[in-house]
Image 1 (cartoon, rainbow, N blue to C red):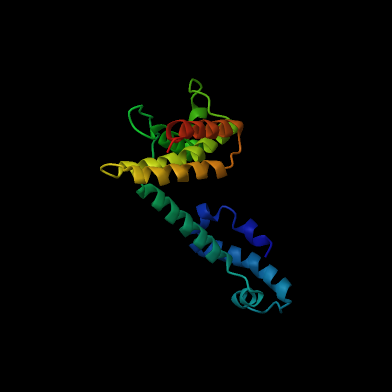
Image 2 (spheres, rainbow, N blue to C red; image 1 turned 135 degrees about the vertical axis):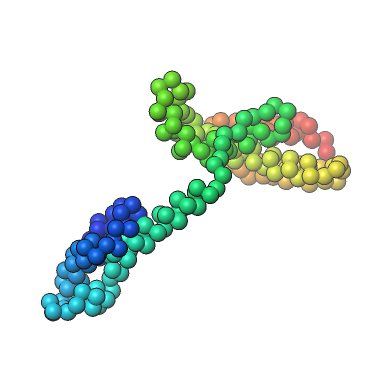
Length: 199
């Protein structure tokens, strides 16, 4: 039914009002007209029968459902602990990676906040965010390897060889979408060759 999305627009906000008899009758009256046209039923057919024959879901139920879904979403969001930005710490491994990852995750929330304050720093452009996303993809293999190594009491040479081999293969196969990403990948590959080239 073409009219359905128009009639239920914003139902997540006003849907609870569909319980009221007057509003319910108003919604179903409109839907009845479309149901009678689509099924070519007689005008003396009841509203419920016309809607059922047309295969429509009653608009009051659609509105209530939309309202319930939005309410559940809001309750779910309010129960979760709000995320904050992460500050990079030079003495902690991968802290810059975690900082960039969290910033991208919260970028849609940060933008409207910064717009409220004239003296706030300017938000990054879409192109700059693209650079950061590319860097995150490039740094992720190093983060995985760091976790793997730091979980051990000591790392043997037998483990280093496959790790370096996997890293090299990953970076050789990796495709970047920006120049900065390509240069960063090249620098990492050069570093791996310089340190582990003789292994």
